[in-house]
Length: 310
Image (cartoon, rainbow, N blue to C red; front, side):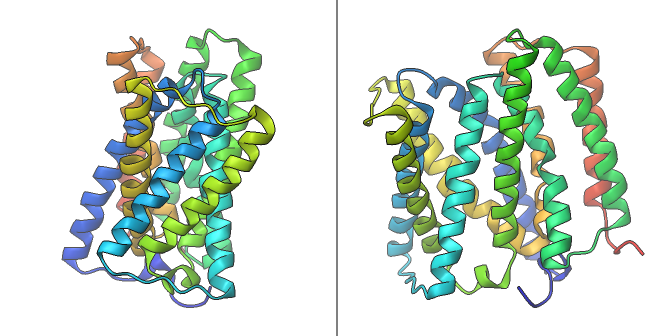
């Protein structure tokens, strides 16, 4: 975990452009996943849906690595790294998120997940030594105020009741913490010792194996829904939202750090709610509109940070 923090490494213009493109692509993809996950809730247990997703994702990553002739040789530290990634990112995180979506609306889960930037910033400082930046701190406060308004708007609109809402928010927060731990792992020097694509592939398959054990324990033998929407959604979540998006996202973390990479989580819920507006008939309220505007304003200020705060 020694060495210069990723956020302090000066990236050349071409690499900065790649980061921006990756940021946009990841945000658009993950902004669409919440509605797809919602459609996955049915005859198949959410735990098995998570298992199928990362089985597909892991096999896709290893296939890509094979085509690129990337070999993965893991020592003890390497196995510990991919095992931790599998547990925190591809098991705990997503089981909490899928469970939350059985309790509350997909829009609310997406909004709460925007809080990811807080543990990313704190753990990035404690574990990786990444500095807090003045503009980033101020922008984060503004952005999270906007997210808070979005959460309030969602809670008011949630027909499932306060109890279900609080349980859903709690499950989402546990998913946020799990995802943040995985994000920080990707920013360590240990992560840089191994080729990303095959390492993520192995981590996804480890996660899928843990998911399968847990799913069998709580939901019984595997069940499959052969409805076109479910199958297509599972493939989309595995190949596009996992194999592609996580590769881009973790690449961004290695360039700009976990704290700033997490600003995707501010835009994702806004995109998710825009999609919900079209698909689910989500009704925007003044508080929600104001919250979205404030969150975007805070994001612009936060990502403009250049010098560490003193």
